[in-house]
Length: 461
Image 1 (cartoon, rainbow, N blue to C red):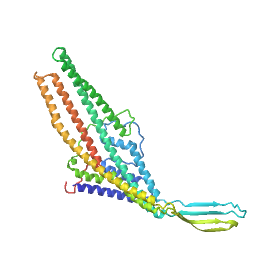
Image 2: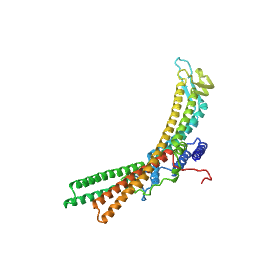
Image 3: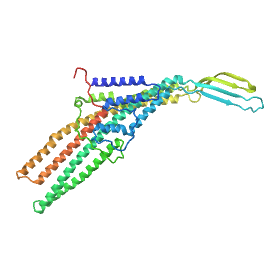
Image 4: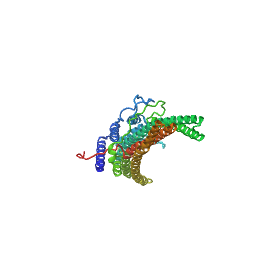
């Protein structure tokens, strides 16, 4: 199945790049480039984006009365985050460099006016019009190099956006679960305070010991400390979320959508090998690194061609002493006496080798990321399942049994409160594990280069 996945993504990538190459021309308008970046991004995230539209002015608030779900947060981040705006401008700059590579150098006019110092008649003067010609054999390599860097800028924009979406969704999950944990900690504090008050009353009538009172007071103090930590975590998570959405200075925070997270069923069909192949097929930072490496090879070719950098041909008009005039061809030729270009070639070759090494380093890092994310996600799912089925189930059962004992008159209210607090603690533990699963899933998507969608052969469905 995964061979179909890789083949599908590879065909889509090649088709996109072919269309990109055919439509790229010597125009300063980067609309096609930004459209390609948007298509690559939408294919990997399912979120439409149009970077050809003017950037909206950041208002400083959320401009929404609805509770924000992860996709809404991602769209806000794409709209407002300055890093994406900078990446878009990098495409504009690469497009300008691509156009520049197509342009011929301007002709050069040389004017010389002489003043006789020997007392003879006439004023010597000379003028020439020269056109540099070395660009004629350098132009192809310059265009290829600029084209590779333009493609790399397109891939880098899409990759930065995919990463931002993953970061925004993780930040949404962190803020949402911090809010839920704060509610649970608030309930735990209420139970701890109620239990401490009840023990104090029991101590007053001789039904509890000082040790029991101190134990209840310690639980109350710990609950107060935990609520303070939960409040700080919630406030920090909201501010982190605002910063990713380009609203770091806002004082207003929206409600967050509480729809339970559900991983696509197709994720369970993927193996670690599948994810490795998927990452190699659709990671855009890998695609950008490949283009950089390709451009570095073009740079070597260009450096070799630039060993003879100055050759100009044109015409010259000369006025000599005694008003004698001359007109004829002019030639300008650099003599490689001191700089024969070998140093530039050697540097370009070294940079090409470094670009190839960087490509392999990025590839290795991508594989480590996707494999590690897969382990964290798989482990997190198993731990969450165990916590729900055992830890939380036992805590809930214990609370029910304690309440039933109290109803029959053989239980103790303090014990019921203690079991209720333990159930809250179990819910907090489950909440932490749920957050870990959600965050690891979003990280797994990012590490794989986009959505974890399984493509199957026609007829298999």
